[in-house]
Length: 247
Image 1 (cartoon, rainbow, N blue to C red):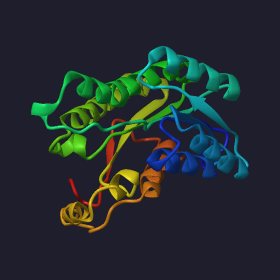
Image 2 (cartoon, helix red, strand yellow):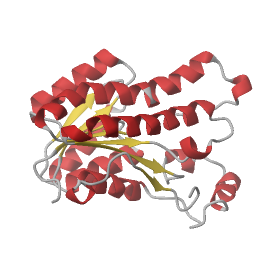
Image 3 (cartoon, rainbow, N blue to C red):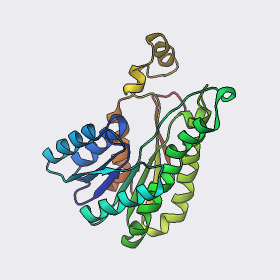
């Protein structure tokens, strides 16, 4: 119970990596606010699962690309929990097209959620973290932000931007008792991977030294480490969970 007494807000937590992160934090004793934008059924199911662990959990609906919506969500969580100790910026989308075929709306859709969303959520949580002289911010980036990928100029740019912002915030907030880190997953077993044709999956696996896709729980454990006492001396880092795809 490394996180007993702590509270957390996890964005995009209704499925996939976000869901695994929320559960892992709860298993270590944290109370967790589950952010979602449309899949209320999945989010509510996760709330019930966390409550069976003996932890508090609340729904926190908001479109993270919308600042007023995000502001209202943060204040709702603060009313429920009294404080937010941990913020995990996990919400993200893809909308893939080659750059030649990419229009402005496709570019902005991904940047608005993946990059602006991190700004919005961090902005609305940071003042009370500063006030309590404690906070743990973990941003979920991606190996794609480190190596680029065909047809993903928007996604790669958004994740690289989050990585750069992570380092800047780590420097600005270190004196306030707040650490800011990133976790960069490689190819993880999620709905997105399962929808890829088997031939392409085989091609991806051939590029990964460990010859398997990662598990959402493995990403979640890295987040737990950064939020627990063992991670207190780590800030400004982008920790890789990619099976050796990028090193």
